[in-house]
Length: 146
Ligand code: DQA
Picture 1 (cartoon, rainbow, N blue to C red):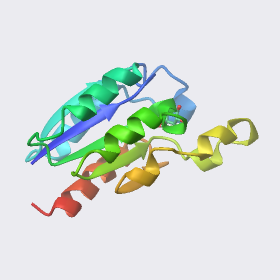
Picture 2: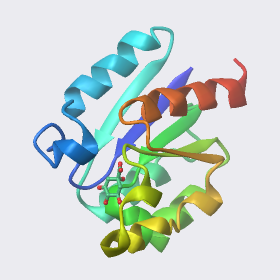
Picture 3: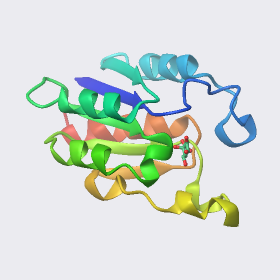
Picture 4: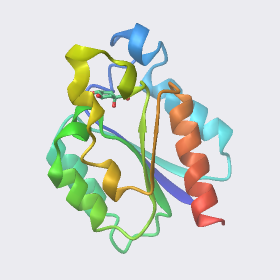
């Protein structure tokens, strides 16, 4: 079982970035927790602040032996049709995850309540901090039933 975990922009600074919203764990700690919780899963972890790099990474999954993708697209969630199209082209399950609950972020943050990515994903998990990633992996395992 091979799962690619993609972290989008501004997630490399987790731990220092608005910890009251995104938590105190660093990206490395989240990746480590995933690896420890799912020892039978072979993970690849990928982080980029660059939209095209994420598109390239997703394109590279066509005809690959990956079984699923867990992606936190960060702010690209709200406007990246390029990432949406790259996900649409895949035949394996893709689960969108977010650390924060995008519906409780207040009037000034209303733009976060729209995901252009979610409609082409198998499902969407948000608001559970780093547990969102764990639930995302669980979803891939259930969906692929290996
Ligand atoms: C986020 C939510 C996005 O709106 C924001 O731009 C992020 C993080 C989350 O995990 O809660 O960068 O994806």
